[in-house]
Structure formats: structure tokens, C-alpha cells
Image (cartoon, rainbow, N blue to C red; front, top):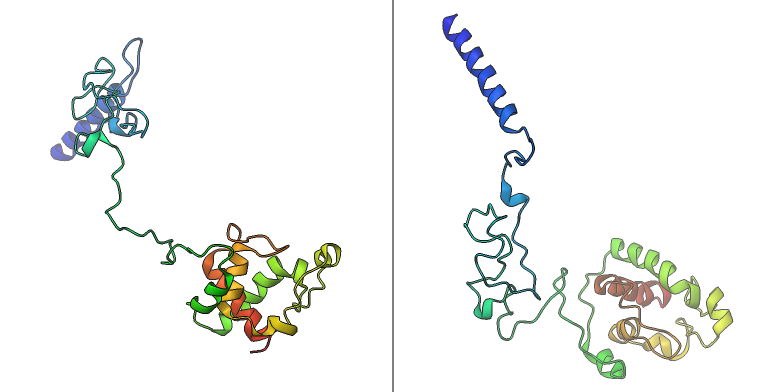
Amino acid sequence: MKIAKALSLLGVAVAGLTLFSCRADGDFQGLEYAPQMYHSVAYEPLTQIKDESRGEWLSNREDEKGEFFNSNIYNPHAMNMREPVAGTVPRNKGGYLPYRYKAFEVEIAGENVTNPVELTDEVLKDGERLFIQYCSPCHGKKGQGDGKVGEIIGGVANLTGGAYINLSEGHIFHVITKGKGRMGSHASQISPERRWEIVHYVKQVIQKQ
């Protein structure tokens, strides 16, 4: 019982001390838990403060440097961002390489670009949804160029007839990406993977190939 009572008194004392240490009064603003969370180092690319004592009067950094010191002493030229390794090629989150063909290189793209997305029922279902959302206003739900917008602007491709039937998947992807004629680029609206799903839908369902 004596031990339990002693532990209880100790707990009360610790709680009281904790509450007292959190008190702020006048010039004393209280103690901060994990001060680095409140006073993080602002590594900004356009500000290089190399004086380690700048803001020393305000600082409570664990590295004992001034509050405003923000240069990275470990990188060349005190750069806060490191340059990519020479020859590095960026990929997006889907692992796709940057699309490098220019708008006028549609024929070359049609010959060399292939669909990396595996054809599945789920892909076709997604392709249908995307086609209706992005393409049907001009091309119509069945791809015949009779969408409401297409009727107004005219000159919209009928994907079910003529030379359009024989267009390669790479050609269709290129036109969605870069645009052609009256059709503008949709690259900023539709991700590469989703563009390929639309291509699958056009070739398999619209053109039945």
C-alpha cells in the first residue's frame, strides 16, 4: 500500500510539474516540445544565407546554428537541390518515358509506337468510359463524327469508315497526345495510360479490329 501511495504521489507531482512547465507568462513563452517541428530549416532554392549565426538570438535549433541559416553545406555550391545524375531520364509514376515525338511526326509515331497496356475486359470498360467523357462530344458515342460539338464545328473524323479504319494504335495515340487539325492536344487532360485505354477501345469496339 505504501508503494502504491508513493507512486500515486509521484504521478501527481510529475503531472503538476508537466503542467507548470507548459505555462507561459510575460516574456517566458513556455517550453516547446520538439522545437524543430516549429522552427524547421527553410531550404529554399533562391535564398542562400551562409552566415551560420544569422538569427542566433531567436534560434533553438539542435545544430546550434542561427534560425535563418539555410545553406546546404554538403552539396556543391551550397545548392539545396541536387542535380540529377548525368544521363538520367525521368519517368512518370506509371513508369512511362517522356513522349518525344513532335506533332508533325505523326506517321513516324504511327509506325514505331506500340500500346504498352495489356488488353483486358476491364481496360475496354475504362476505355469506353473515357471515350464517352473526352471523345464523344465531337466523335459521337459510336465514333461516327456526329457528336453535338462535331455537328457545330464540322470536319470531325468518322472513326468507323474510310482511311481511319486502318490507322495504327500509335497513330491514334499520337493524335490524342499532340492533336491534329481541328483536334487539340489532350495530353494535359488524359494520362498516357488512359490514352492507351482509349486506343484499345477505338480499335476493338469502335472499329471492331
